[in-house]
Amino acid sequence: MSTTQVTPSLQVNISSKQILTISIPIALAILVPQINFIINNIFLGALSKQALAIGGITGVYYLIFGVMGQGLNNGLQALISRRAGENRIDEIGILFSQGVFISIFLSIIGISFTYFVAPYIFHELLHDTARADTVIEFLKIRIWGIPFLFIYQMRNALLVGTNQSKFLIIGTATEAFTNIFFDYSLIFGHFGFAALGLNGAAYSSIISEIMGLLVIYLVIHYQKIGARFDLFKKFELKLDYIKLILTQSSPLMMQYMISIISWEFFYILIEHRGEQSLAVSNAMRNIFGFFGSFTWAFAATANTMVSNIIGQGLQDKVIELINKIMRWSLGFAIIVCILINTFATQFLSIYGQGAGFLEEGIPVLRVVSIALLIMSASTIWLSSVTGTGQSKVTLSIEFAAIVIYVIYNYLVLEYYNLPITYGWISEIIYWCSLLIPSYIYIRTMRWKGTKI
Image (cartoon, rainbow, N blue to C red; front, side):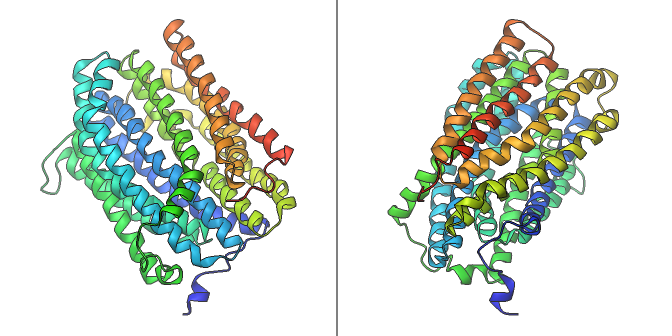
């Protein structure tokens, strides 16, 4: 089979078939680890309610660094997509290799911060000292997965940016199945392994990230993707490309980090309410992630397709494309909303936490379902702003939304001490705060002529 047959044309059209061809594999690639996260939390819930509660705090903390890589990935993806649209194929491999260099540097920052700064932060913010010690112990293990995660995320930018998203599922499926096996083995002590409890989940996640990285790069090698784009032939530092990538990616990295930091702030406020409220919120994070997979896939599709068609000189087709992607995203979200409201009790029962958990969780789930509907539109418009090359505008929109989100949560959860259902309404406010300015900015056409 020739390389040309393996790798389709790098220029895209704006048909629904093209949208689904790119987005469905991305959705499956996102969905598999979300299933993995839910199973992980089911295991932790079986271990103890405290373990499930701590899983919420540690999961969001790790996500802060994970989205650093995601911001780098999305900025790099926009650049690769633009080069694909412009048929400047020779630059794709150079961009990829420089992204790997940046990933290694960021992972060093993440590990250092976790060991030397995070312990002071958690001891100051968490009311329960024993819980803070457990969180810190877990994170000092878990953070060693960051280098593998960051480099693994670079495959997203390459495969999505070059319209080969069908290969994403292979790496994520490997990662998920590995994590499930080692979660079961290391948390509870099966198949001859020692029972490590909560820390077993940390070791399991690291092993799975290593396996996912190994498998996806074997795919890149055997599908001759590496050879097509000369990914590893000129693996040397190029400061001009580093600057270009950071110019495009750093606002996105900052955007995603402040978003997740604000979510960590939310979980710290919830921690003040006790283990059950924290466990409920951790379950909501899993459900949000699982059912948001298709929305995030369409958002990634919007980023890459908008950048690609601008590279082709088809700026006048951008809004038509965004509307098509948004309709698909919203359609999936409506189906999800119906499902989780119809089977709310069944979804929450899988955590095995009893009647009190269900009583507190179901009203929150209703709120989350509304937020998912709004998110299905807002992420498309916001990612489209990124696709135009205006990542600084994306950061500005995100920052304003976060300020509103943090103020609301502090007033509702800490100052007025209202039930956590009111706290989760902040998700509705947040996604509306992203949707409105993103929509207005795209419609103004001020992004035309942006060069990246």
